[in-house]
Amino acid sequence: MEALHYEGNHSFTLKTVEKQPVKAGEVRLKMAYVGICGTDVHIYHGKMDARVKPPQIIGHEVSGEIEEIGEGVTGWQIGDKVTVRPLDPGTEVSADNGFRHIGQNLMFIGIDSAGGMQQYWNVPAFTLHRLPENLSLALGAMIEPLAVACHDIRLAGLKSEENVVVLGGGPIGFLIALTARQKGANVLVSEVNENRISFIQSLGFNTVNPLNEDVVKAVDKFSDGAMADVVFEVSGVQAAVTTMTQLCRVRGRIVMVAIHPEPRQVDLFRFFWKEIQLIGARVYEPEDFEEAIALAASGVLPLDKLITEIAPLKDARRIFETIDSNPAGMKYILECNPQMATV
Image 1 (tube, rainbow, N blue to C red):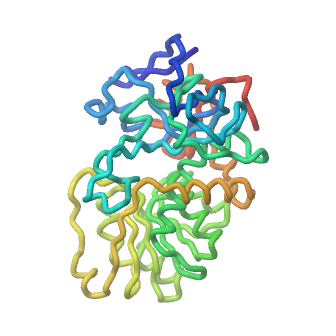
Image 2 (cartoon, helix red, strand yellow):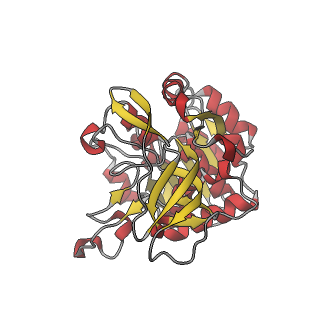
């Protein structure tokens, strides 16, 4: 089979390798599609080499079909369409407080271990989620990022008719916006890329460009003076962290979605003055995957419009270079087995 190996220093090599034997508790997937996420781009840039340890196969936004079932695995059949929740929680410790999806011994499959950018992939059966027949495998590769959005919104305690501001209109930010609107919220997206702004507007969203407009005034106008019930910080930049506390109404909630690798300056006085809640949101839990699958299968979200390009594994280097040079793109997906191609 063919497998794409990240070699370090912006380099990938497509190698022919032997399939690995299927161990007890595992299944072998015939891979259809693998989406590229922001973490994969960070890996490509060499920022995670100490953790990833190249050469390594990466990728965790996946869809495929079960080809072989290991000893002890029940409830699955060869040919089942699935996606993978790429978390191996490891041994629980008391400090985890029962939340093993973000526990101290968590291993993220596709980062801390081999991922899905290969034609066949062995994964633990407990990571599988079934895809319905009416959902294409291409959209099946969108379930993992959509599950992130579902998790973020669930932790926010979002209610219908609440005012939502999403800071950052990239793939995750826009999936949050789509899901929040589906739940009945009024949504404004803050984004700096004009091409992305045009795309977001084309799907009926209110937008603001913080480079050209005063975001606080825009939110005030958007909400008729009520300001935001919930702010999702998805941009990962200091400017958004500075602004987020100004956008909340009294007892509003801020959900920290973006990864901020460095400490940020935060206006703590506003947290005190308005009794704002700050909520951290990381990855997902099984119920978020199930909600994402139901949403995707229902057709209520225009997920297909987020797919910028689908390309074969051999074009991975070009796709990563395109992502760097074209920040207006949304979701790029790699095709692992061309004979499984779906629209």
